[in-house]
Image (cartoon, rainbow, N blue to C red; front, top):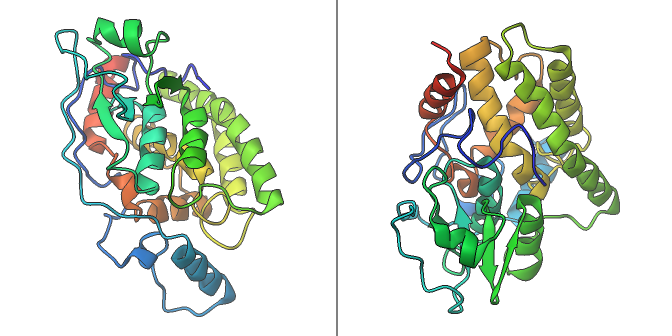
Length: 300
């Protein structure tokens, strides 16, 4: 799945070249805390309401595997030699700034596959010729080298990683939730385009942008057993969070608009997802993202 909003090449909202990410709290987002595994997904509360109990129990049952912070390799450029391709190593090719690649990266982390899937950074502003010629002819990220084949497209990769590797499941068994998940995945490009349109315009935040945010707010309230799109953390949250992260930063810093105002579900989603190491380990410094975006858009 692709989008005009965030193409993974040098573009206004994706810095052209960057070193491995430096964790930093987003605007109005609390820093991730060290906690017992069963508390990483949903923070423990003193309340004993049915909703809280259900959330805590489900979180404990599906706790992700947590690994220490990785030492990520520098991005490979046009002068870099390729790794020993198709030698049996499973490799996830990413650009550290790319929200699409971030989706597959989060899925890999959440399932505890840091030792089974190796991260390879690609410099999209100076990408190596061998990447297109020998790895992925589409010349985009992310892509996954596995079992002597290379697969691409971010949402397809998230599903592939979920289906073909061990670790916590990224989709619940509930049929209603599965159906809603597909509806939300189909909507990702449309929502990104609606939100992106206001970032690049000189006027106020557009009605279609407000409508998209309100639709996300409503979707986050559909299930009462947790703060995420399907109640508990799933591949739908992985699909949306890299973009919600960036839009919160950009709307605040460029439009002076708070996407969480009068949207408590989005606010809670942001707070809770920032307690998940699998996600926070993939984040970039928000001020860096903002300054580079403003520069590329010609905003002082």
